[in-house]
Length: 184
Image (cartoon, rainbow, N blue to C red; front, top):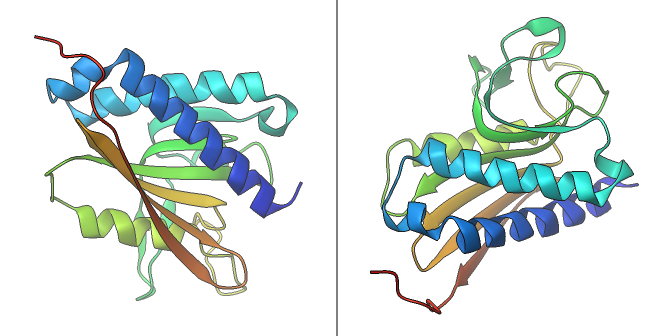
């Protein structure tokens, strides 16, 4: 299967998982619980969806705050300035270093109104999807099929997608909805 098809399937499964998050965990979102809690709940739903999908995701896991690479090394990414910095994404679909195509999805999440490190998150995603070149250090994580910045709000969410085919791409999508019930 090609990268475009994997990306499309991953986006669809991610949206299904986000829908489940809003159906089953809206109270957590409304109460503004920690980002880590919301991300862990999203990981739970996403893991279930990739397991139901079948062989494409065989050997892949959904992890939060994961920071290891091949050979148990701390994951790093190389930024445009050439700096190599350690990285720990909020959520990953990856093979935990067991497959050549290790990273399918790298996701960074923020709750609505949180502005701390947002630019850093976007930079991280832009760099993590870049293809490996002959100059890319071995320890650098790159060539991830899809990077996603997810902003969670009570009335919907915003997704910013990053990917690379022949050139870098960035696309935004906003999903809003009216509450069908009112929890007091």
